[in-house]
Image (tube, rainbow, N blue to C red):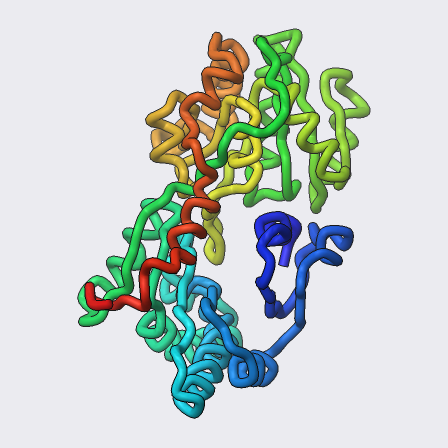
Length: 360
């Protein structure tokens, strides 16, 4: 569980969350307003067995480590429904996977590899239990189609890009020439590439400033740069309102994620939060939103052409800072309903009964 998950369900009465662990960005004040229950496999099974449930929303099938708990609550509910001769819960899921977990086997340590293979045995069972799946990115849809496209039974499916709506706060007519890096200060998020690119950006756009927000292994490097460069400021793990305020004043949000053997960016929450506040986005093809971003005037940089990523990143950041688009013009491209909310509405739509293979 993380704060973004809590924010999505805090106003959904009747929702119970069974969770395994908490992320570092877990807001206790919001958590106190949500029905959270820590549960392992046994706890999930008995919850499904003892409670009348309308909809079970599970982690997406490619999260193989979640398969035992997902199947436990599903089978608990089905056993209850069979004994009581009542309707079983509809099983739904939201998918934004960026990698097929089978592609990770060769780079896992031996023990972890065998554990992952055991979990993978359960993934088809999870898939066959799903009644509805909403894809948040076209990349996720293509991955699942490649894996399960020939399965006889298919869940009802839809694609709703994981895009935000305009934030409910005033937008500046002209944004300040500020680049925000937000999130994990790590190599995989491209943080050190931003640091490497910044001197070139500052040299070409002298009025530009870099605002580093987050936490992680790069904290010392961030503070060191800020100490030697007046154009750089650092906020380590500030509260959410401070983050939103910084994005609301910035021109650019940079998240140049890099693929790693065990990881690839799915969407990138900073990208979503930056878009909602009218930021120009500078990222890489690793995010599942790369296709949409490139089609809507944002910068998607890559180093496949032989140019060092830091050089291409510097060019993209300068271009974004010099862009004449206003924040209002950027948010005008966003949908009228938050993508995650729209997907949730479709998943929970009571008009649709459990459907597989086109049959109700």
